[in-house]
Image (cartoon, rainbow, N blue to C red):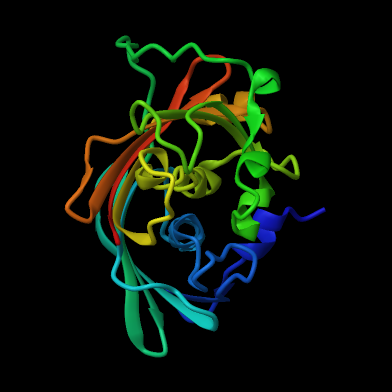
Length: 265
């Protein structure tokens, strides 16, 4: 059975380097614009579908120039440069002939090395002992229900000691994680404004960078299990807020990190 995520990110190939997809009704925010993680995911998927793509996704820098509304989205994929093991891509997304997003993406084949260091995974409550995000935030948009999220620390729309939060997450329908879905999952954390105020502050992401460290073996081992998102913020002031996310497997492997800046009212 096709998962909801795969169905909603299924691109149609047109001529060379061009793809199209209707904006998802499922992955949509309350204001009517597409969830940024969905936008990031379809840009990544477009690169993987390009006939010249030779390696897995390792990074994406996405600029959100405007919201993606209902209707057709066109994606234009261009290979900027290719080396022996690394390729550099640009994806431009547009609606009605106007640019909405630009993504700079890197794909690369990498080999294991004798150096093997990573930071230590935080120690938090188990998923079973954590709080369902849906119960903590019943007004959340529909796309949130397609992720099983359990709050281990940090309650949204309340004044916490800091903007830091820990959330266990996986696809609600059991879809195994892969690189395209990682791009979406890294944008699931709620804005840091939600963790320093009881009031709702509308806002939007302007720029987001995601770096994938997981090997194919790491992703296969994680499969459809819970992953831990640790999200921090350095600043929530002057109408701007940042966010930095780490995504861990339950076995303690750092799968990806992501950072973004957004504006709020």
